[in-house]
Image (cartoon, rainbow over all chains, first blue to last red; front, side, top):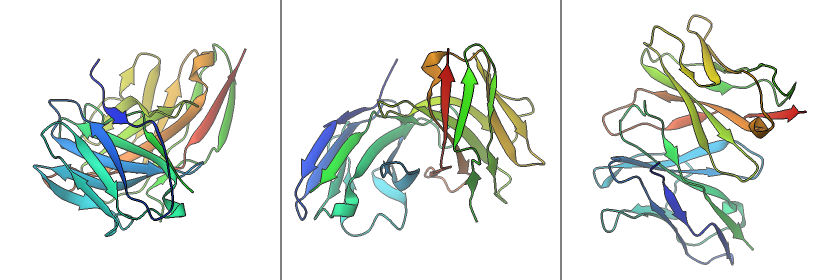
Amino acid sequence: EPEVTQTPSHQVTQMGQEVILRCVPISNHLYFYWYRQILGQKVEFLVSFYNNEISEKSEIFDDQFSVERPDGSNFTLKIRSTKLEDSAMYFCASSRERTGEGGYTFGSGTRLTVV
Amino acid sequence: AQKITQTQPGMFVQEKEAVTLDCTYDTSDPSYGLFWYKQPSSGEMIFLIYQGSYDQQNATEGRYSLNFQKARKSANLVISASQLGDSAMYFCAMRESGGEAGTALIFGKGTTLSVSS
């Protein structure tokens, strides 16, 4: 079964450092997303990406965040200067249809710890 | 106002019994989708079932069924014949119609299901 692959599975970084979280969405999917889940809390939307541009973003997705699809397969989330409160599980997701009827497929997540 | 409400922080069920996890939603959009995801302790998010707002019949996927009551704005997940491996956090989520470029999923706070033998 096709899957969304995320690397690394865990990352520890110092406050103020830049991190790049990587994702390889399912190859025939067109819509890509990043979500985050602070420990013990609900999953929150960060950003959606379609046709090589951001289509929607939440208020969490401020200037510290950026996304890129550099080579047609990878989809990355960059946090420029990490803060303690950025510690969370970050999920990449993709879908084939705009409506997500086949389900949004999530990766296994990257657990980011900022110290 | 909460878009997705899951009122049961925790549910307990015995193996082989059925369990219903509650979800109510709030939207004025006539076109929306409802999703259930399972999150085991390992952390990944596993898609279980989808219901579109215009679907006439309740969605079913194996042991999972979605009890969709549109007028009540509820989308409860029913798991039949519970198994120990069903122990996990369950999230209800909604997607509104948005524009052409995809839409975000809005999640509830989740329900922790514990299945005992």
